[in-house]
Image (cartoon, rainbow, N blue to C red; front, side, top):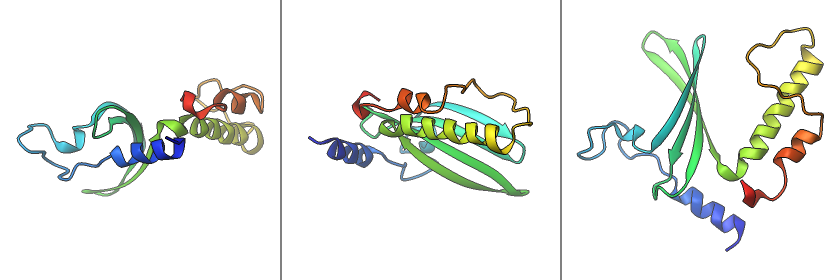
Length: 136
């Protein structure tokens, strides 16, 4: 089976719960049924959520990144990105490259706080996350 076929099968295995509030006789809300780890990042009027979820079969995992922004007293606007394991390296590498560019070229005098060390020289970071995609 080709990597593309495996990737499509994996994505076909992904699901969003049919009823976002309750699932059958389960007392736990369905929208949390497949969530196995979550990291909440408050940021002013926005909150970011990094959630590890399982596929329907429970044999694989993916990441959802959600931005939740308060737009008025009782309403939130949400945007969600689904990130699959075969794309983790490319995503992290691109994120590091973009942040490094902003730090070095756009805001060299700004003191960024809370950033992990992303000081690998240009190119080495790409090499760290490239290679055989089956190794992700």
